[in-house]
Length: 296
Image (cartoon, one colour):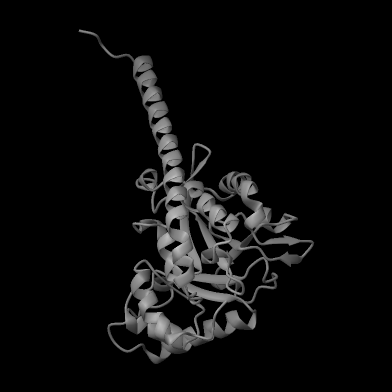
């Protein structure tokens, strides 16, 4: 009987890791080819029919059957993508366990967006209707941002940038959320990304081109789930938060809000700029006939 040694076990594990890495890389290439090929067939017709919904954002968009394109074809102008750094590659997913099945940030979002911009598709380039890509960093801030900055450098022609404090609008504005490497980002010039603020930043003096938006998890600040009327206290608190964000000329959004009409109605009436949902086709049906003037 042959007994496995530690060296042989380690060697087997290394071989398995190399096989998995090759598998992930090949899948990413296939995804790019598939997505770009699909865009050629679909985007021109779709763009002619789409009217922007400026006060909606696609939360965890990568869970959809058609990431990016499904939201764009409904007119949604902000898409959120959770991102992990894995072996120098930026992968999409809600957790480390499922990200390999979703694909890479480049394959699912950056390459298709670049293709749409090059084709001048109004799904992305519509005048007066900015498109926001929110990259929610889930891994270590500085290390991940260094890798992200290198990746984004391949696509800078489509991004909004800030040079010497002056904004040059591009078709795509990138906002870094989650574990944002604030110090690194603030020092960049030119800068191709903005950062997503938290409630502690409501009264911040940072310029809006650096921090255009304030975000928070709904359940961390509110108990109301839409099953009964909102309490006077929480309604007043919501109004105050929105007013403080708007006083600083920043957008305001909440994530993980209940996907129900009662909550969406309250958010809209409180002038929350961006209402998010994983069931964004249902959200779009709710918002379209009730368009809010409070848009980015």
